[in-house]
Image 1 (tube, rainbow, N blue to C red):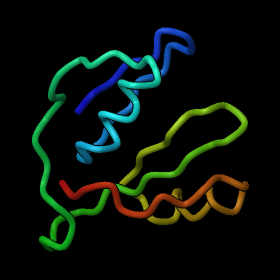
Image 2 (image 1 turned 90 degrees about the vertical axis):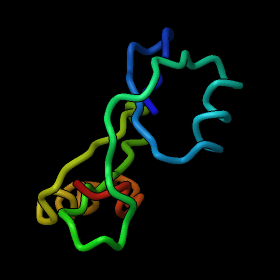
Image 3 (image 1 turned 180 degrees about the vertical axis):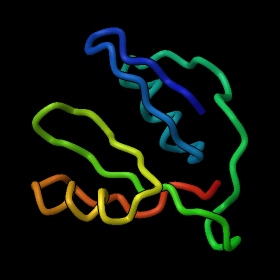
Image 4 (image 1 turned 60 degrees about the horizontal axis):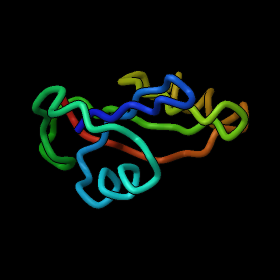
Amino acid sequence: YRLYNPNSGLRHFTTDYEEMMNLLSLGWEYEGIAYYVYKTGTGETPVYRSYDHSTGAHYYTTDRLAHLYNIALGMQDEGIAWEV
């Protein structure tokens, strides 16, 4: 699911229906399905997700070292979001 926050201009991607519904209740706008991905555990390339509390932004990467670097900078580790 793709969502848009009109207050911050940020977009958020999630495969979690409950997360999407929670964001909608907080004022985010639903923009539809952005693309189709694999569930985790399929052996495909993982997409890591981290969250920056200072900006409210989520970061997505397939590069594990980049993800670990974000965590070392103080971002919250949100694990594997999905696989591609």
